[in-house]
Length: 78
Length: 225
Image (cartoon, rainbow over all chains, first blue to last red):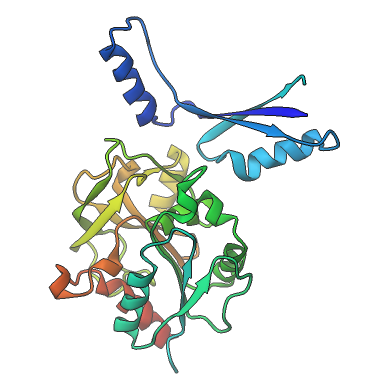
């Protein structure tokens, strides 16, 4: 089973990297970009026997820092 | 009775030797060196230092992998028993990732790696780690980090300030840290995390001795105990 975990900064957490990317896009002449937030994508290949609860626990215990980040789990059809 | 300390080394730690030298110079006793894969600490420790560096290559998040290593489970248990724990730079990141200290350390607001000597104000001179300083004293200590921008939500910031848990504040703009927090204590006062490097400021020939007070405070606390 393929699982994608999307990790993003919580709203209100300063994202200097997103801001730098935003400035760079503007420097390239792209207009109309209101904001950029940088995140992280994990692709996991897990056994079908792994429970949803276990995947959720992986996110909370390691993949995301719950102080500053949110996560979203997406199961990908094989 | 000798002051018994330990310095933890992770793959990628690079301030562990400086920390060990500082502890030995100030206490007169060489610390025990502990490897990340060990699951037990030496018996009877009076002080544990989690040093700076780039543990596990800063993979995932700074300090994240180290905070889940076997030895950190022993450090967390020791901290909960009241053993003094100092985390410097990457060590501070390890302590926030492990949950021993609140908040998180984000990329510096200016995005640059900051490597210079900075002025720090001693915000709490009554802690186990700061009693050799005067409240409000300004000291000069080096920083060298890319992710030292302290973040916590407003309620947490209000609480830690209200409880006097800010040990050091930056006396100048360094990295965008919330409320200029440079060093933070846990609720019990036996855990300190800080981005600046006191272990690099113990020899006059290396630029200054303002970091000695931190180690002297900890040793004084030990003698008094």
